[in-house]
Image (cartoon, rainbow, N blue to C red; front, top):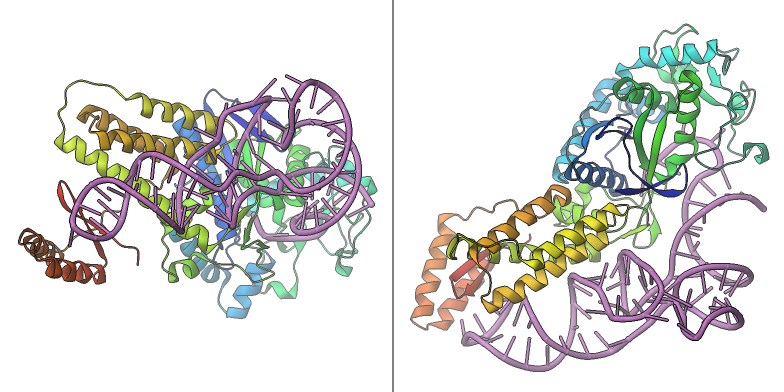
Amino acid sequence: MKIYNTLTRQLEELVPLDGNHVRMYTCGPTVYDYAHIGNFRAYVFEDLLRRYLKYSGFRVTHVMNLTDVDDKTIRGSRQANVSLDDYTRKYKDAFFGDLKTLNIESAEYYPEATTHIPEMIAIITKLIEKGVAYRSDDGSVYFSIAKFTDYGKLAHLDMSGLRAGARVAQDEYEKESAADFALWKAYDEKDGDVVWDSPWGRGRPGWHIECSAMSMKYLGETFDLHTGGIDNIFPHHEDEIAQSEAATGKPFVKYWMHCAHLVVEGRKMSKSLGNFHTLRDIFARGYSGREVRYVLISAQYSQTLNFSFAALDGARASLARLDEFRDRLAAVVSAGPRGFGELPAWSENARKGFNAALDNDLNMPEALAALFEMVHEGNRRLNAGGITGDQAELSLKLLDEFDRVLGFLAKGGAHVDSAVEKLVDERQAARQAKNWAESDRIRNELAELGWEVKDTPQGPKLKKLPK
RNA sequence: GGCGUGAUGGCCGAGCGGUUAGGCACGGGUCUGCAAAACCUGUUACACCGGUUCAACUCCGGUUCACGCCUCCA
């Protein structure tokens, strides 16, 4: 499997440091608000990555952090007049609920910043001992990028040419260099009761240090894969590398992968611009998690994705086509003869195409093309009646294999209640009596109950209509 | 200013030096009581200007436009 490594700016064969065990860390949410659709693009990308690694035979240990202490969570909790824990718990719960809705697999660990303060302090202590970090007069601790010669290697920034920008705030005069970043922030009135003791006095950790502390705790000082959105490349990931490698003297991460942003109807989306959609907003418009997942996963992760409601409509139609195909195969399995046969060539081709596409830096559009070619050819064969029960069964199994990666093929089973069944029976009776008016009336009635009925050679079939 | 992306048919979205990507939408047709699905079929695109090449959407140069990052936004 080849992946694009941000660190080397090249496509590289993924070779884990330890056998077939991939240890990966992905930057998780800051739990100060509901996550938006752009955040979920990253999480769905990471889910695709972890699922495909497993599908490819790797063992995966995946860590995703929860940032539950930073400026925004503190500000939010104070505004809401609740404790930091109470405030962030609400968004943690919402986050996990959203992951479930999008059928995102659980990581092995979800460490929280607030429960890893000692680990962070240990790293900062080491950095001070090594002379790459320094205390300021107010009790904050900063990392001195001048002491880390590799600084800028991930983002490919030449710090010597950077001038202090307008965003270097007045209150950061404590720093030796404008580009130095905080490892520990001295206590400020605005922090309320959010405070920890440290060898440098009371305060709280800087942002970047949590990821170094928690990734190394669960994955070791050097691990395989670290991912996030492209906006994390600088400064967040650059700073993680600096503080981690300065502390351990070892390479921090072998492969870095970053997913591109998502735009909404062609416009940049961000919390600061306020034009973001949460999953709640989208569901309120009648779309499902499955449809959202399809949209988010179907573009190549390293390309900007244009999210729109038209795209969700397209996803719905595409999924209906896939569902239909599965149903047709299943009908052959239950009806057709079995006992011999193998995976038909048109399925085998899809398997090869699917794997080859994803092996190539997770090229999902091509993988889906392979899948849809299978659907097309399979439908032709089904029309011609040229598929055996074995072939259908093996093809269905292949789809199940694909779904280990895709996570959107399996449908939630829709339960047909008895009143609906009764209507279908009545309509069938009307049809047999060639009472078309009654038949159509019942069809409309079923539609109002949310069901579409299709007349097939095997009898009427029900399909749940989207809300 | 520095670094880096991208510009593909109505929409989304891959791709490669020569062969129909794929999905959605739309038109025509087959099938069907009607409908749906499926299949067949049609509209056949690669921002612009040069260059390299037998051949460029695909490589090189330039132009225009859009976008991202440059200290805490996935």
